[in-house]
Image 1 (cartoon, rainbow, N blue to C red):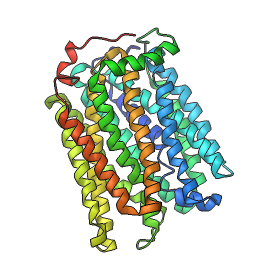
Image 2 (cartoon, rainbow, N blue to C red; image 1 turned 135 degrees about the vertical axis):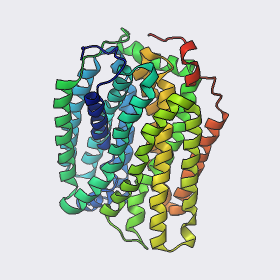
Image 3 (cartoon, rainbow, N blue to C red; image 1 turned 60 degrees about the horizontal axis):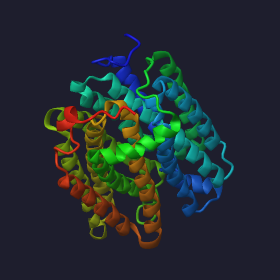
Image 4 (cartoon, one colour; image 1 turned 120 degrees about the horizontal axis):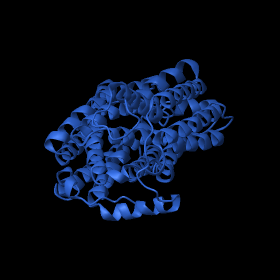
Length: 411
């Protein structure tokens, strides 16, 4: 394989590395969610204080994407991935050693910032892929990333229940250290696509935002879905721990198994985005998410064991819809300006993770003050608004159909 980024096809070994690497990196954002009750007990913290751990993790991710992800257009992505990986290892070790909840919250903020190496991996795969198969390559890589998101909860729930939450952070640090070693040895070097200095690079984010209405629609719609996603996963463990369920962290994490099936949407969505257009995929995905959350309103009228099954099917449905929508949105966004893919990706994911952090904070507050049905109401409303945004979108404005006619923002 030549040491260039202008390849039409991505070798299978690199697709596997991209998929596994993005999954391991993004998983570090979600290990804490099923462990919140265990963490709160272990550190003598209140449920409200423990709720800051996932919130700061998501906010750190948004901050890291905004400030660090654009560097992928300015520097060799291989070097960026390796350096971020080393910083992420240090943050995970700090979390494992946390003596109190404040220390863990700050370490979680750092974990979020440096876990953004996942958002360097995905644009790298998109750069190596040819125009005709970009959706398929993104779909395959995102399958790994999405499985990392969903299976992380299963793994951390079991590990926390059996061996404690500190061991989970230590194991995560080891996994990222191994990823850094393999990436350093296997990844090609990537040529920079812009010579803008750092300050101008950040300012160009605003220019790109104003220039591309397709980017704005994708960010708003995906952000609304992410808000609902964050509200669900930040409250599930606490909801299941209370009456009438009285279930622990392992049970909460096990719902990631149902949601993991949603990762199957990634390659399917990528294939459909290449063949039938990503706009249609975004509408179908948003509709599936809205329906999946709507069924949770039956909670007051069904017995506890039956509702656990409903939660499982809902998790499968909304993860399937959300991930399919994300792949389609990425296909749209990556086609807008090939020279600015890292920055376009940064804007999409900043919106997504700010919204997810807001969903985590809002969901925890609503569950504590008004109960589970208030959380369901927010999730259903947000997903319906996302569907409304996609239904109003016109496929000729910022969609994949007009990629060839769009100007190139080279910076």
